Image 1 (cartoon, rainbow, N blue to C red):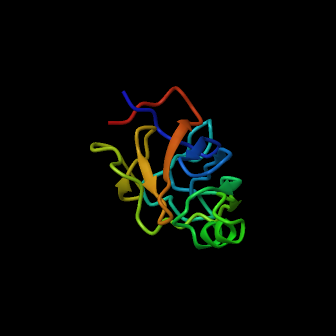
Image 2 (cartoon, rainbow, N blue to C red):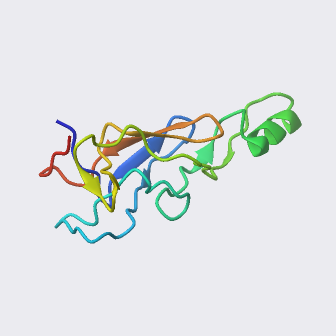
Image 3 (cartoon, rainbow, N blue to C red):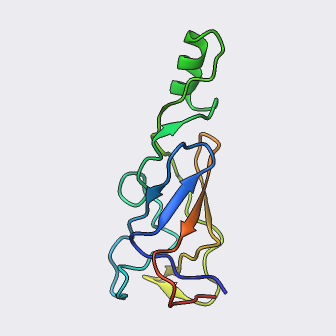
Length: 128
């Protein structure tokens, strides 16, 4: 059964070089491990912190640096761009009027990376 994702969860991007921490927007519901997240907690720098360096050729800064290096892939600082919410979200549990965020959800970055949950930040609460 999927685990509820809370602040302090570790997330990673398929195009990033380092994991980062997830930060849920505070809601009325509280958990001992930290605020729980919902699918709308997808705002760069607020909920999703950068993943070190980005290696996606779709990222304009990576493409520019790679071109300047004669085609050698040159990672550049990660600046996540996530215009859509996490998917799919919990089918039965809502937080703040939106589906709860669980450890099976993913988030798409416009530069081609897929952001996923590495550790949910807690292990006691399951959501469906």
